[in-house]
Amino acid sequence: MDPITMNSYNVSNLLRISGLATGLDTDSMVQQLMKAASIPLDKLEQQKQWYQWQQEDLRDINSQLLSLRDNNVFALTLQGTFLAKIVTSNSAIATATATSSAVNGTYTINVTSLAEAPTYVTTPTATTINNTGGDVMLTLNGQSLVIKNNATIGDVVTAINNLTSQTNVSATYDSTLNKLFLVSGKTGSQSTITLTANDTNGQTVLQNLGLSTSGINVMGSDASLSFNGFSITSVTNNITVAGLNITLTGTGTTTLTVSTDVDKIYNSIKSFVDSYNDIITKINTKLTEKRYYDYPPLTSEQKQAMKDSDITLWEQKARSGDLANDETLMRIYYSMRNVVSSTVSGVGSLSSIGITTGQWYEGGKLYIDETKLRNAIATNPQQVMSIFTGTSTSAGIAQQLYDTLNSGIDAITQKAGSTTQLYDTSFIGNRIREIDDRIAQMQDYLNNLEQRYYAQFTQLEMYVSQMNSQSAWLSQQIGVMGK
Image (cartoon, rainbow, N blue to C red; front, side, top):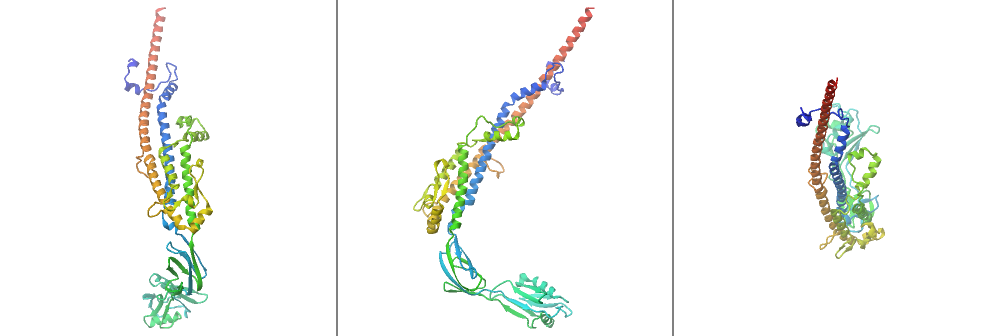
């Protein structure tokens, strides 16, 4: 059979014969041919890498925008953030915290008594508390308390504590002092410890506990105080009045001074400015980053021939400028800058309370005049609040920025997708899928091309081998004829 005319099925199943007849380095030649044919595939891989870098950087920026919105800006849209109060007092008599409804000022509080829980201490007179010969039923705060036959004081303590959730009464025993302590978990005159016997056996148990046969009935006491001359009685030592949450700690007279918590409000604003500066600087850096066109993404073959350190340095330049002049980022960047430099009608701007924009070459960073901002918070907290939260007719800086961030986050998600999406339908996501499809098609084409090259070289080897055989036969015949 003429090897040149062999069908493709037979060719594809032949062993690859490298240079046996021709002396050619078939593998090397095919590799060189495939290297040239693979150039379009390398271009696709590089294009895919470029899109992946863009996607990663956009998603990273989006995460930072999301953090700025949720962790900083949202709090500044709430009036409560700017109504933070601080209360000073004599902590030996009372401590207090203020809600946003508390009015700055000084309040006088006179505590005459604290709320107390009922307690009782007794001295058991026997080692075995229940020596009546059978189980005994007592009544503790309306609940049945079973004292087992031959129960010790430890058994009684356990039985009482097993009912604490129903009776609010707990028991402890000090063996050194031989004292049994009964304590209620509730304060106030409505809280009691009532322990009685149901029969004569129960009275015996009470006597062994060191109690009278009639049992005990102990009441707690209420807190009594005056607040700016107004008398208050409370079953607990925690009282809420005039927007103040007061905890009584002792008796006597003290003043509660309520003032604006300048530190807390200032720190909320400073945290926002710091986070804003981080992201605005990052976006500006990416928008103005230099593009190195002489440093395309490396191919797999190129990476294999390079050291890891060289790959890192190369890819730093190859990746540089992947978002330079990106239209989506540009809109977000200037929208954010426009908001923070705007004025709330009838109230003022950030600069009026000590927050200004730096030089043009700093890319929109904000700077705080700490003295001016703290003074504004202390002397005119309403203005500071209105600049951020807005008025009935104008949206505040924080609300405007919150809306701007929402729009920006949505725009980046549409372009680069999100790691939380089950299926990425973004612009870049679609482009990467399209490239993947083209890569798969190109790989199939190259696989077929490689097989075709080897088949052709195999045919060549077989053809040359046949010609060599024919030449040898002719030489042999000529030799015979010449004899």
